[in-house]
Each structure stands twice: as C-alpha cells, then as structure tokens.
Length: 80
Image 1 (spheres, rainbow, N blue to C red):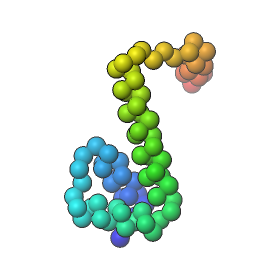
Image 2: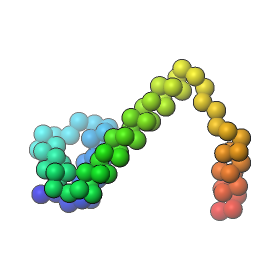
Image 3: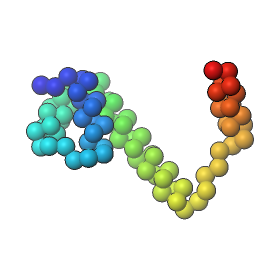
Image 4: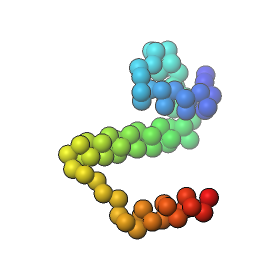
C-alpha cells in the first residue's frame, strides 16, 4: 500500500506523464480506501479541466483581468 504523500505525488505525475500499470493500480487502491485522497484527486481533476478550458479560451479570445483585481494583487505584493 502507498502513503497519502506518495498518492499526491502520483496524482500529480499522472496528469503530466503516463505512469506504470503497477503505480496506477496502487494509486487506485489507495483512492478506494482513503476518502481524503479521493476528494483531493477529484479536486485536482476538476482544476485541470478548468485550466485546460482557460487555455483554450485564451487561444480564442483575450482574457482581461479586471483593474480592481490588478490593484489588489499589486497592493498585496507591495505589503509583503
């Protein structure tokens, strides 16, 4: 069995490159048993879908950040 930390590493790796069948099976077994890791895996997959959608949208249309958001970010960076 793999740990939650190893599961997080495999989840991340799986999104970028194919992982071995053995690692994929260990990952799936852990996700069946661990509700917390299962929830994290679902969140990661949802975020990936969102980011891929933004990437596609940015290729089609320019996405502009609201001026107020830019000001808040700059202020937060300045305060650090």
